Every structure is written in C-alpha cells, then in structure tokens.
Image 1: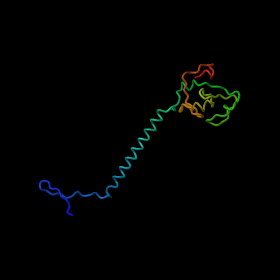
Image 2: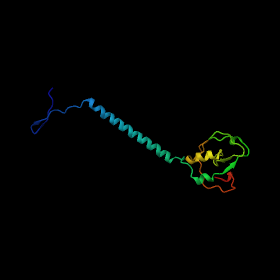
Image 3: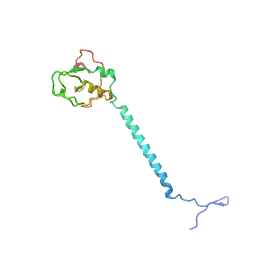
Image 4: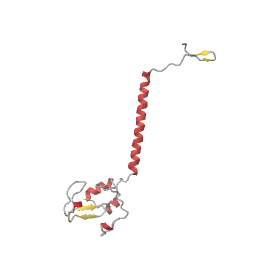
Length: 143
C-alpha cells in the first residue's frame, strides 16, 4: 500500500515519522514523578489543614496557670500514678487534677503536655477552661 501524501500547493511532504518508544521513556518517568509529587503535596496540605483545625493546639500560659494545683493527701485509685511519667504519686507532692475528667498528674508533667496539647493524656477529653480559677475555689465549682 503506498504511503499517503498531502498535496499542498503542489508540494508533497513525507509522512510524519513516529518517535521511537526508547525516546519516550525519560518523559514518562518525569511525568510519573511530577504526578507523584503533586499527590504528596495534596496529602500533606490536607494533613496540615486537619491538624491546624484540630483541638490539640496546646493551652495558653494564662489558662495553664489557672488550672488548680493540689497536694496529694490520701492516695485513691485515680490518684495513684502519673500517666505521663508513670511514677507513683507520693503524699505531699503537688498535682493538677483536670476539671473535666478528674485525672491527676504531676504539675511539671501535665504542664509540659498541655503546652502542646489541649486534651487529657489519659482519656483525650478536650479541656475547655472558660474562666480562671480564683484562689480558694473548689474543683467542683469549675466548668
């Protein structure tokens, strides 16, 4: 079968040559890498948006300081161990008891945790402290 030719103003041109597959391989690899990079950017962006909108941003210093401190007097079941450092709570130590869930921790341990998280490390309840605790105010009077 003869090759088709175009006639344009009486000039014939040769048929278009096909590009060998060997020459297309680098371009297909580059396209695959670019598509993969684009997909990674979309996934990372979604993750950042979710984490920025999440509740675990940490508490401000003023709110952190407003959480009441207590001294361990009697060891009940819920006050026996700090869930962050896993050390026993000793009578006479200063602890913080979170108002929403009543979990207790060493002051230094929970303060470090709450600087980067706004939830209880044991039960993940989000701490929403709407007002500062006044001196002498009981835990039952908090939100």
